[in-house]
Image (cartoon, rainbow, N blue to C red; front, side, top):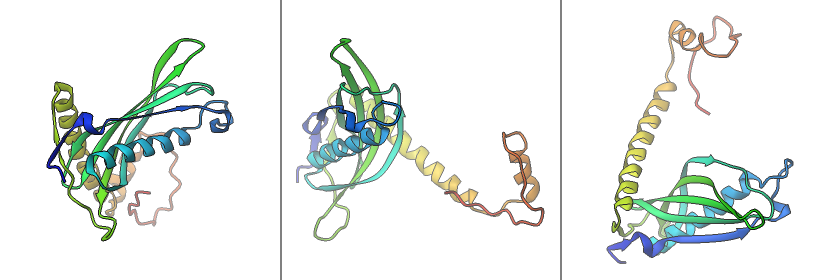
Length: 194
């Protein structure tokens, strides 16, 4: 295994024509179709960087910026933004080109965390480090580090939310929100996130 690889060594671009079978009831391309292709391009990019089988560990927010139309040619560009010991954050930019209108729009952006796995043992395996050659590559690496820290914070807060609340604290948190409370007064307030 190489110790370090450049970002450009694993940059992956997939391009696909959006056909009517991909559309939803509103006539636009279904978001699930876009996500499925994003997962494929994330896998290809991560596998190229790691030289190993990879699995999707998480998807950190998917922004749907503008709808994708049937007949547009959509490009999915993936690059490694960050590497840990066995994980990689893959940034994905999706752009749709409308040939008739001669327009290109960014339609989606997302970050997939992929983990390299040893196929025989099923355990995570070490991935090469990342060589940062451009200033924006360094900024993307730092941004991914911050997102990782925020995600750890949110996870910790979610664990806190599973604890039992005092009734007054619970009601105070909800009183200014757009909800109507019809919970029986003697119900214990315990958290369940999802």
